[in-house]
Length: 269
Image (cartoon, rainbow, N blue to C red; front, side):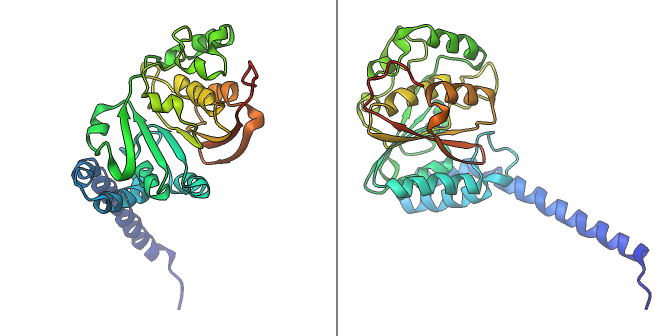
């Protein structure tokens, strides 16, 4: 029996077409998940919200409408493993992603605080969800100001690594309006995945990375994880305020820096 290649071509075309249609349907279905998030997490049942978020995190890598900084499955596993290793701990997260709410269960018995600058995302979730406190914050530094802000910090002693610097009005990178517990707590893990920073006209992560670098040094040993390090701002400011010698691991678009605190140094690196 001869093998006829020409007869197989139509079959292959049909198979590829079906695969494309299935992929499109999956994207359309997953893109409707934002309204379901509000319904699931607006209830008083942590189990309902956690179950929804677990499903959302599995689908996040195939959702065309997901924001640029959404975590892949491997990245979320990377963060979860670090949190699990140190739990129960003090966990601070810049940026509200659905996957991060699941970390409150991983960090059971610890303190988890999430800082988010998009009011609609904060309203979608109970501010006391499963022991996680969520605060709405405001950033005043835009992505297009990154270079000037970096020069300002290098030439301004008020932007040093001392704990007082994180609330200094003399340093343009300082975020002075955060809840006091953010400044006063000795954090074990800090995740920087916000603000969005997708364009020069949007708030960038310069202030968030700088603040993480300052408050991490007030603790004993703090893991600082920065997401989207494929982008210029995240790279620049991580090297400047978290320091290359402190980089201990990475996965996907995440860098993990371990900062040893309680130092009297007047410089970050």
